[in-house]
Amino acid sequence: MNTKLFVGNLSFNTTESDLNDAFAPYGVVVEATLMLDRATGRPRGFGFVTMSTPEEAQKAIEAMNGASLDGRNLTVNLARPKEDRPPGGGGGGGRGPRREFRGDRRGRY
Image 1 (cartoon, rainbow, N blue to C red):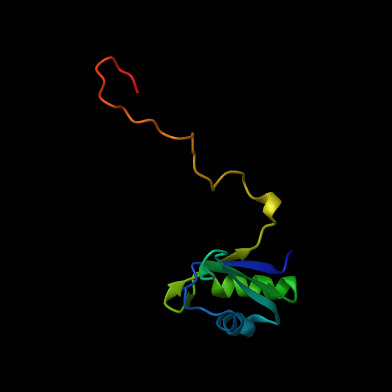
Image 2: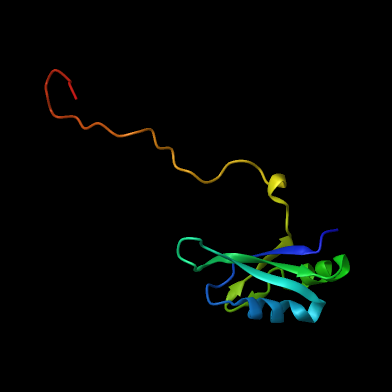
């Protein structure tokens, strides 16, 4: 079993220290990381906590999934590697510039 946990639905006010302190009662927290928006540097509302053993990770999941932190009910589960996630998401469907109808009755653009 993996020891890295995904923690979602975090308040934008939650710090890495807060995350560390919240998970510490369930074992040794190796690392607590918040994901930040590259453009703004603001938190994205999720992060990762790495526990020292699989048993501690499972105990943390059981205790913290649905628990409240900074007024938000957390989603906690095992982190999945990027390649294990389903494809899709992100990106807009840009199809080039849009042409505007000029009102010509022959239907020209």
